[in-house]
Length: 153
Image 1 (tube, rainbow, N blue to C red):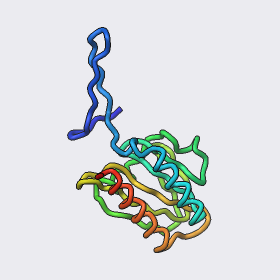
Image 2: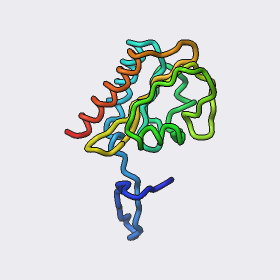
Image 3: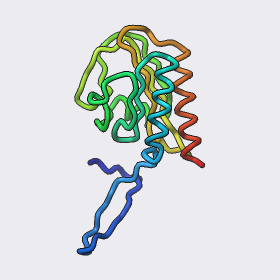
Image 4: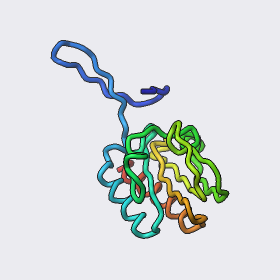
């Protein structure tokens, strides 16, 4: 587990008086909601959808959950979140979305989820066969904005 400066932590004390630190993921509160949103996006666009918090993938639709679910996000996704800018990449090539796992994708788009000025996750649409366009890019931005607003309430 990586703890970055400014990361929120939950502090528990067990019966024996031991202090337990747990990394707090605000977007994990939306876990079921994020899964349903990912499924709806996949049903609508026909392209695989991933939703992650700052550390791991929390919702997967359209691809094997075993490949992505609860796996660490890659530096590429971390950078997109930190930069707070959405990305539309349309050149086929090797991409690392999961830390340590490269795959060949035709195209992908990443939209960071930014709540109260802080990046808390990202929505990703990927394609192995077709080049994604503005529709998918706007869908990722809309999904990220919607999830951010849910977190701010």
